[in-house]
Image (cartoon, rainbow, N blue to C red; front, side, top):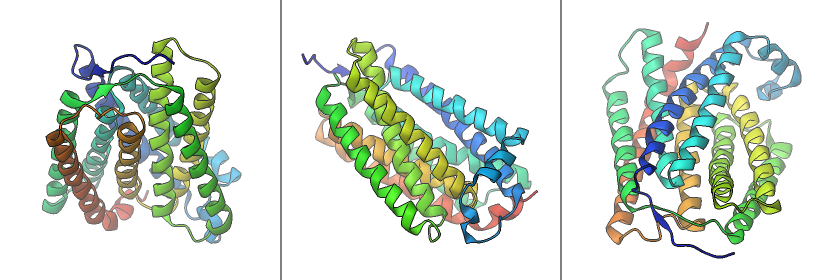
Length: 305
């Protein structure tokens, strides 16, 4: 494949991806809250294996307008994320998903009719500040790159390894898995979904959509469905804050890592920008971890119907 020069991220339209991604994050948070409320309203199924999303439980959810509404919001969030990837590099828009955790915390506090608390507000500030700084630095130093066959093959190979590991673990130890494990697995898969979406969209724009791109599209669908399955199981065993917090930490970490290491979106960034990436990312992660810890205990009580 003929390689063309990388395109700096700071152009007249690259900034459009930022507000689009933020809107998607808001819908992600609200959709997660609605889904969690419906799943929690079902009550625990008999046995420890009840944490798994069986066919009967899924059929019951399909008859719940609240769950369907949440699913529609999540679908809209995915469409907005894909649209944002059309305009901006992966490492710019993916961290904005952390906004979902902030929305989840504030919405839960409003539903409980009480203040989130000083520690939670501190955590929100760290999260927003870290993500804002990361995105600002990425917006002026990241680049759009020409997607080659090597990029696609590398990401697909890594996804195959991850899917095999998760399938093996689920088959052997799913009765022992808690919400953290299910959420972590989903976050990893959704990170690959974002990376594959970026590559497929880029190949379409490049006019180079062929069998390897179709394979990436198939891998994207498989990863998205598998991640959604893991998220539904996580909802049966954890709070919405825990689920959203896990996703907003792991999903961007995986996607940004793929964007930097595999796609090379930060290859032209100066050393100071790399340092700023690390500091801003650490700040956001610290806020997310603190927020999940602060809010995890009381949330399940207030979300109970």
